[in-house]
Length: 77
Image 1 (cartoon, one colour):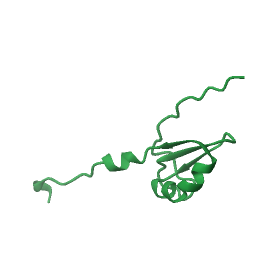
Image 2: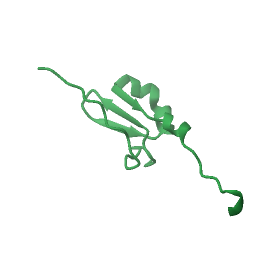
Image 3: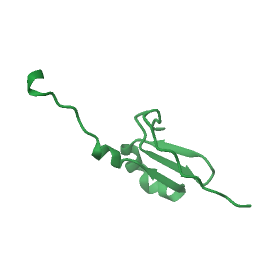
């Protein structure tokens, strides 16, 4: 029997942290076949334990550093 791993789809705003309900930035695929989703905060908090049980960790928390914030132009202030 051959096992084929397909790339995980990107996480979206609809994917929520299993711990607190915030937007998920980490997907942890377990050896049992299940998966867990975590926000960046809980992903970092549980990282040492997750690495022990994970087959794969999809970490998209780098997207947080590249996000931009909207600023008002001078006329709007």
